[in-house]
Image 1 (cartoon, rainbow, N blue to C red):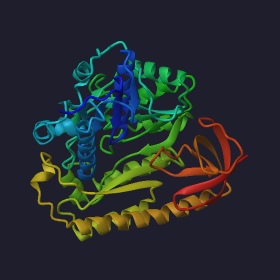
Image 2 (image 1 turned 90 degrees about the horizontal axis):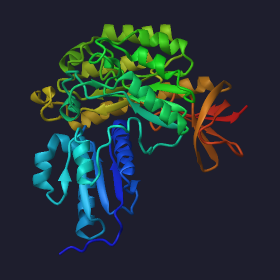
Image 3 (image 1 turned 135 degrees about the vertical axis):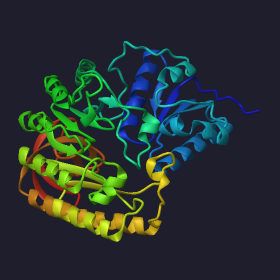
Image 4 (image 1 turned 180 degrees about the vertical axis):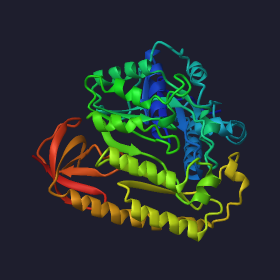
Length: 432
């Protein structure tokens, strides 16, 4: 019989996957703390473990499974007492997981927070709107404005895991932003499966621009950043708000996935090359100097060499400020799963590397143009001999950083920094 640990009850939350999972973990931790529970994030001394999993693509699923198996083994060895699993993988594959890894105490889906809290001997407190235990540095926080997705993209399993689109009312988001500002948050990063859909369910119109106009009024918040905007049905009034409101960063994350019309049609993206180019041109016209980040998928079923060459040339022509590239993952129960996964893995990898080589050159050229210019920089951390920060054109963890040689800078404060040199993905500078 396995021995029980001698540790006093402390709940360790382990977060895998995207920023939306980070947000969910923070909400869970806030609820637990309000119930008087001892809680930690990714520390080794908790005897009760909750793993918030990702089930998006193969690599993420494997990481989640490996993490579950690791903690189950620790449970067998008496290092932890209980293991609970929540999040996207658990939502999508709960029956399979219960069968294959039965030593987990209980599995929960993405919308079962009250049930998870009950299993942890805590009550769900509805009055805790905006209360959460932050896992990011004190000066920036994610603000999830909606849950789920109503888009029909052929390759995406997110609606299976997160359900249909559900917007959070503006007043609740403003309340949450005020609470975050009171804790010292200076930058809000707005996240959702699709920011552009915001408000359609509760206000019967796209209301992202209205939300931004209310959030900029929150004292203490100095940057508001937009992540994950869908190109089809893009609400153009958002661009006016970005241009007119200094607090809204000149930055847009718009995952475009592909540009070949035949691939876009099969992906069920609801757009074309011409429509995509039009919205990108409009962004640059309405907000001069805007930084555009995108993500692409290569190796989608039926992607011909010609489709790929079209994509590669387009990346070269468009000169995105930031770009990430993924290889296609064949996900069961998606529309594309009915198609033959006919692009060999090595071809997918080669195509991804070619796209990133083009982007690396673009990034190097764009960064070189920034030398001798001065930018407002938010300091994230001290690392080695440098203080590391970001401009308004960069999101944490995924974009460029500014490395500053200085005796002392305060983390979470803004400084004017003159760029003295540049590499392909980093800038170096000094405070002026």
